[in-house]
Image (cartoon, rainbow, N blue to C red; front, side, top):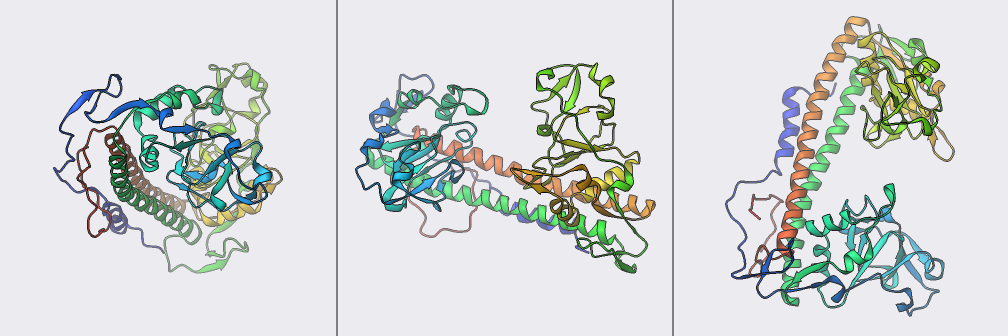
Length: 482
């Protein structure tokens, strides 16, 4: 069995700690003289910097009529999902004539920034470079900022500065998930800028420093993925092979399971109860108070998401009592039920007795240990393989109640089941703690990245004398004070 004892897990913790910051009192200097910018949120700026609006040195969304090339030639095509922080995925090519209507036009050297929520807040911004024939078209939800009196690298970082992001976010207009940053907010945004040479130097400095930070973030992200893989491997082995490597094995008779301990039983989920699909309640009956109803948006991977909790009148609990899930029930999403993290399934730990809406299913299991065991089993490779095999895919993936009920689970005797459950849940807690530590590290690094960019592009630190080191060591970030 994969050795994931406490000592072994400490090895993974050590991997994560390799990228942690080293203590240092060094800091970047301030400029020798400052002046009042006259802008409340900008405060003091270096004395030799000029205060102006973005529109005076960059053009927002150049007109397509500016393009004078051959519409029969090829160009790069950029859907929104291919615009990331500092990178554009250039793997789609179209004929210009096919995309010149209805899409956003840009060229090499333009800055592309998402204008719609949540992509704007997520930092989807990059400099266009390497476009096919130097030209691209993309999502109409992308803003194009074309520099004409400013270094493109400085502009790229200036558009990521914290106050700019906050003001643009607060100014968004539109409904729900389609809120956008108004163009006039960007055009009229007041900034302070140095001369061109200093802009280039600031951009060089930030290129170097953000690359170091991004490398550390990538290291933590790799650690999280490694921990997820090991977590699933531990669960898969424990729920299909047990904890004793010396016991006799037998063929399970199920392709996805292989051999299981000879004294175990292999049973389908339907042996323990029916998976009941939810009722199609009318959204017009939903309100902010009453009796809780679980919608598909509330079911996540191993937990519930209550950001958009909805309720129904108490009278519905009488009319639709068969759709009330008791404590200990396993709740499944039935539409798009598999995400990158795994199956969208959660256990109802509290006695909420919620009503279950359509596209959600539940199975009520009276035995608490068995209910918890099935939940951890759902994280195994064999369970996921059977689950995916039972999906029906038309416009979107769906699974029927019968598809869940037909999944085979190896079940040990009751006392052994409890030992395995305790073993798995203990290790899951350790894995989760390590992943939370890594996520916390990523957040801190992202905050430092944002703070460093803001300090450099607003003149809070002076990097005119900065030079990149002669050699670049493995990424280790000092606790420099910004």
